[in-house]
Length: 190
Image (cartoon, rainbow, N blue to C red):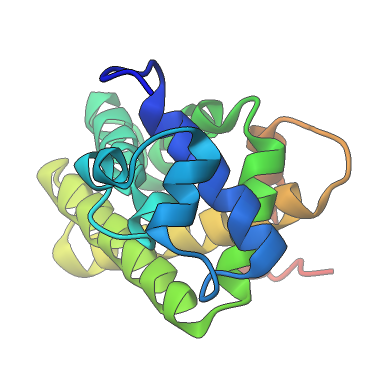
């Protein structure tokens, strides 16, 4: 193996997901992931702190996408409309990642410790979104409620998108989920 291998991080992530799907998370080691990727275990640890972080390594980028998108929307836009726009923007980060996202979700759902880590990630996203909403002038309690609602729409929309067999734009599922939430509050729940 050469000292430098292109796309090492992506190769490690793909190898880890393949092994987690085949063998299970607990039965897979960092050494096995590195070997499957054609890299050294040392290279694995240059990119990831542990085998769990392979599944969560992009969470800071997702949080940045949420925050940057929300911050770029004029403060005059109503919070619910800013959330809708933010979700549309974030959906673009999942383009061509349907299979990976679905498999990742399945691995996480099969392991309680990973589910807990996913909930922590969602809570962190919510807190960052709440802060951004407050920076836009939304009162604290309303910002908290709006951020939590945005995360609920994100989670439900993501699950629906991941459950589809064919690849459809994630934004469609976010729109549907947000429309359903609006209908619930308007007393039109079906």
